[in-house]
Amino acid sequence: MVIGITCYPVAGGSGIVATELGQQLALRGHQVHFIAYALPFRLDRYQANVMYHGVETTAYPLFKYPPYTLTLAARMAEVVRSYDLDLLHVHYAIPHAACAYLARQLLAADGAPCPKVITTLHGTDITLVGSDPSYYDITRFSILSSDGITAVSKYLADETSQVFRVDKEIRVIHNFVDNHRFRPTEKQCERTEFVAHDEFLIAHVSNFRPVKRTLDVIDVFERISAELPAKLLLIGEGPDTILARRQINKKHLSDRVMFLGNQNRIEAVLPCADLFLLPSEEESFGLAALEALACGVPVIGTSGTGLVEVVDDFKNGFLLPIGDTAAMARAGISLLRDKGRLAEFKAQASRSALEKFGADRIVGQYEQYYREVLGG
Ligand code: GMT
Image 1 (cartoon, rainbow, N blue to C red):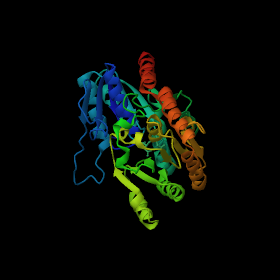
Image 2 (image 1 turned 180 degrees about the vertical axis):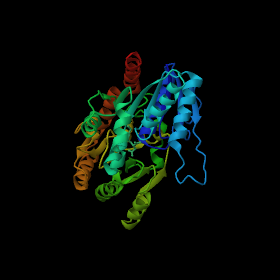
Image 3 (image 1 turned 30 degrees about the vertical axis):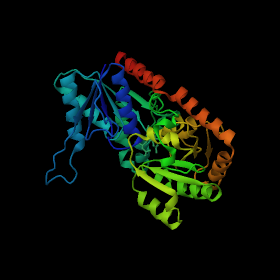
Image 4 (image 1 turned 90 degrees about the vertical axis):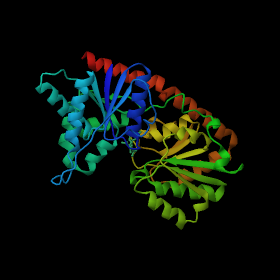
């Protein structure tokens, strides 16, 4: 198949899933064309069957907001014509699904063959509508005019059907990890780079948006480190980074917290961690948690979110109510104190993550769905 993929190229779950999917599809012999305003975050090396088409939006004094959406739609149509794409797979409804619709209209007006369009919903695209209702109609229209719709969890599919009154099937295809890269092998990293022999390493990876509740991460860590020797590793950056730094200073934790900023090869660090914290307010799936589990790191996350499809409560982590940092810390402390149980959780983490969410299993589900949509 010849597949066009559009995503937000910045560090973030939706862009990562889109990029890793394109790379996996290319490995399976499909031709993949990324169409985006910058080189996607993890598309950091040459790979056969992968091409990148940048989208430039011209600045003009009249434009307060340069019309990126139009440039993207035109670029999509151009790439479809030049490479004879079978389908456009867009990640994130706003504005990508609307751009794909427009691209198709452009091609149809010229009598050119039109590709099928598949939209993958990642969650924050739907949340955005909650905070700005002016996006509701266009999002619903874009979702409904796609030939296929996928969501990254059942939790999100149900929410989308309900919020957008969608009767069409929304196929659930979970996030995945590359089985070869995300493994519980400490050969990839030196634990002693981060902690002393008797210290625990606790990690958090996110884009530091308010929804991630970074202050809860710090609070849980403070409680754990009051009882056990531990260090906190913070990976990623975003609007709440400053807040997090301030809190760390205020609580006199700076000598126990390390900020690594954005890292595009986190699988080289995660296997060294003993515990991963993701106390998000909202998480449609929680790719960061899955990547940690695959590297053999138990997760403490929030119940009532899509994390329930990722973390096996009491087997490879704990799911606790949003904001209950005391319970999260208690769960973390008791797990870290019990060496045997910690080892069991670690083994179970990578086993279940790779079995349920390995690329080997999930990428085939996308290929199958593509075939169904192309045949329909
Ligand atoms: O979590 C973020 O802020 C990034 C965001 C995105 O849209 O790029 O991630 C969303 O998509 C990921 C990939 O499907 C999911 O694993 C994340 O759970 C989801 N984030 C939220 O729902 C907050």
